[in-house]
Length: 183
Image (cartoon, rainbow, N blue to C red):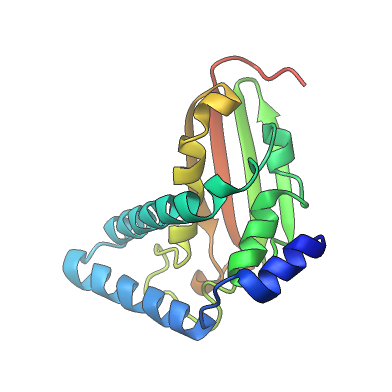
């Protein structure tokens, strides 16, 4: 992070107590399970909450900055704006990022062992991903950039979660390109 980033982080960035965020997430999950009773529905609703968060974050923060990446390979770079953005909002960067291309399909994976979103939380169900709102945030942002990637669709899903007992929290983007990338 450069000098401007450090100054923005220390001075300009609004801070929220991590315990407050985790307790809010836990309360939302408990409510979703109480109302719907089905972890699959709770996962979907938690991701939808993240999508609304993504819209707010994008319009208030990311839209005013430079584009997060010029191409999909750059989006997976450990020094990418996503990694810096995750650190900006949570205080912790992703531990590992991966890029994989198979024909017109591009997969980008972000992993973190000490996830600040679910630290010290135990999922009430092995099927429930406690950090799924992050998948919704990322997915909403990239849906608004499909044209930049010459992509017809994008999904982002949390596939591993420490709160469920997995070794890391992990989110996977799947971009379906209209045509293969040339770079």
